[in-house]
Every structure is written in structure tokens, then in C-alpha cells.
Image (cartoon, rainbow, N blue to C red; front, side, top):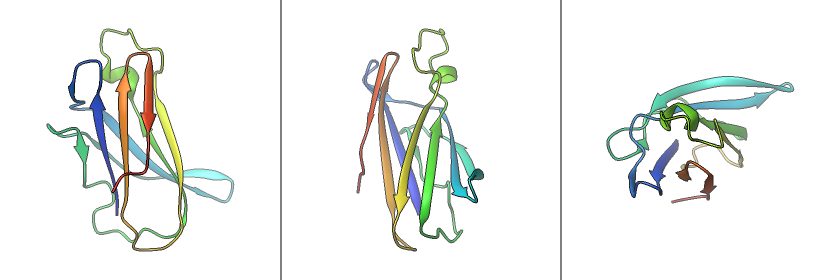
Length: 108
């Protein structure tokens, strides 16, 4: 399972309604696997649902430009690329975002 949680550090609250796309790297190309939007708690817990997640390289793309609707965002999107080493692993990738910066880490 792959989940994420986005917090808007400038506003001090969850980033509600942000679009998130999950892709995997196959044969030198990125293949879209799933997409969703953050809920009222800034979470996307249904990206992978019941699908089997195999070992490999994955990318989460966060649409920060649309989220910062006033257009005052230096980063129009944030891409986080990570490696899943074993099938069945739960990977949680939090994102802390503001109009002019972001940070991420492997969560639990």
C-alpha cells in the first residue's frame, strides 16, 4: 500500500483537495498507476486500494500549483521518487508544503 499526507505549513493546516498522481518506472518510461485528491485531513489513503504493489521505483506527483490557487507558488508541482524494495510493504510519504518550499520523508 502507498499512502500520503500533505500539510500546508504556511496555513498551518492539512492541504485539502490537492491532486496526487502515482506512477511507476517501467521500461524507461513512467506509467500512471493511480490518482486521487487529498481529503479533509490532507490524506490520500486510497491511491493503491487493493492493487498489488510490486517492488520497483515509484513517483508521487503533487499538483502544488493548482492547490496554491492565488498563483503565488514557486513550485508548480512536487515530484517525490522512491524505491519499494519488497511487495506488500506499506509506504507512507508525507509532504510538507508552502508556496516557496517543501520537504518530505519516509513516514510510518
